[in-house]
Length: 329
Image 1 (tube, rainbow, N blue to C red):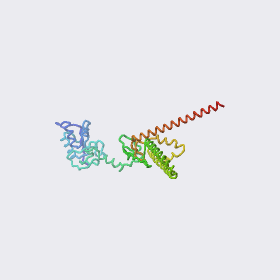
Image 2 (image 1 turned 30 degrees about the vertical axis):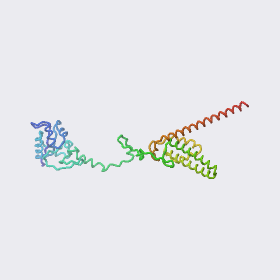
Image 3 (image 1 turned 135 degrees about the vertical axis):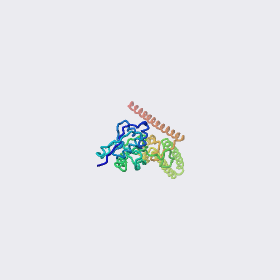
Image 4 (image 1 turned 180 degrees about the vertical axis):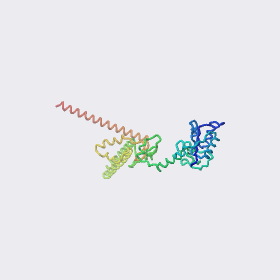
């Protein structure tokens, strides 16, 4: 026949001459538990603090509780021999009094060293449940895919995903005799007008040389025209680079009909404020560049107005002549 088993029952009663706060503090130290779990033992009726004990063990538990000020009692545990599984109530109330021979353990979550218990006194984790979750969890998280990362909604705390501009805060160097670099609209106008004036002066000198040496004058004329075309192409390519377009589009200026519209596009379309694939932006325009570009615009607008007025005058003249012919007939 097996030895009788006992349980320790506590209904919240106190030993004479003790206060409630004192008893709760003593039980907190006795059970190495937190105050919230000790508070739950009061005001809820009889609670089986410990089950399935031998008589000697039950007397030790009872004596320890009474010294702490808790009036507990020892009762036969008739259900100990009928159940093989510990109930949730038993697990929640299962604490070990001080003075019992126990082995030490290390919490698998926080690494706290303590006597063997069902709960870690430092982080409060239920050790058995924590180990079960760790066993069920995968060893390593699945790698994030691009689709899953893209599916997450952006938040104000997300890092910027834009590419870093390596030329931020920089400006490009001006190189007239080069197909590389960028120039803006105003500098394109100023350089074009300066190139036109230089070409007119060179042509005047070549004309004077031609009057003396016809062959030499012809050679110099061909060289001057080729040089002007090359420099003009270099300026135009840099203007296209500022717009973010390929420099090969400058060849549209030699295509009939298209050339009459494309040069206007090069004068109107602005370049980005920052860098593009052709480099950093050009430096700010100087006062001289703005003045020369303004003169070019005045001449351009004035020439267009003169063409418009002359065309209108020609139409008026031809209209008058046509009217006289009709009246005379």
